[in-house]
Length: 358
Image 1 (cartoon, one colour):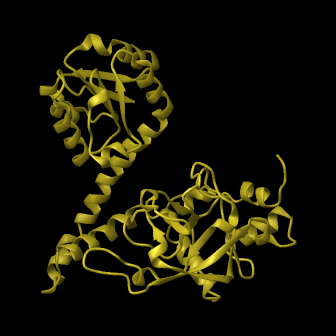
Image 2 (image 1 turned 180 degrees about the vertical axis):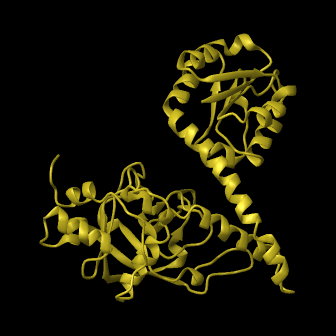
Image 3 (image 1 turned 45 degrees about the vertical axis):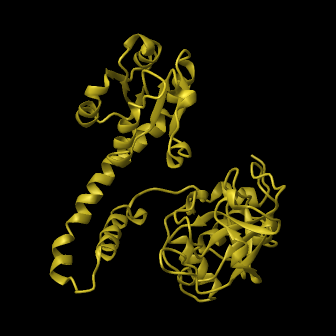
């Protein structure tokens, strides 16, 4: 792992540098004038950033903005004035931007230890994303040759994005996803519901630090195109069609053999029932009943818990990703066709449903 420390006072970060050296990590200390050059030259996995020399000074903000916009990577703000550092909401809410006060280096070292594996993966992913963008940009020539008069920048970006997504197509990689790998959390679209979003019924007293009971959850079935609420587009419907959720045991019925349950999970359906895996601290293992439907007002659905103002409200908690989303909709439409999906490790999941102890 490569750690870049941006600080004009090397003595104030000696404990962090020593910890990095003891762990066998590479560590470079640079001042603010050298920071941009070192990020470009060295491509660190993590940046530890002093913020300012005096209260009211924000020398670190331009560096943070530059990292955010040009090759994002985890950042630790380590400053004697960290308690008065005010960040943009998107920075404050980011899992990988931390603030720690100078004087105690141990929290920084603990953060590096805890996330070491993920920092390296993020760097590998950032490099892969660069390759994916090169592949995407290879399509510019064809787009240019076929461009129509009404093809605006958003359409061109969409076509390039499709090429980028295709680069990361998991069906072409020899991997096995964990069951919860079918979820997107947090949901990507912030203002619009999508088909197969998972909702939780909440009230002013709901403790979201704990998962709810199965009957608190609903699966959205209304087509995404009718739910778009972005820019000048408004949702075409006032109500949302949802499928109700039940205990995980409902999915397998009388079946208790793990091998049979695995087969049902891979097919995606057992009669009218679809299984959804547990997602730690988000939702329990669920059974969706495609014949038990409920219609709820779209006006009662919120995207952020901060929007909660009354009881009997539905909070979007996560989304089912493609191609599992399409598989669920095929099951809902009761067709005999289904798309191919990546292999998943369903053995532990099947044992969980069958209540087999380790």
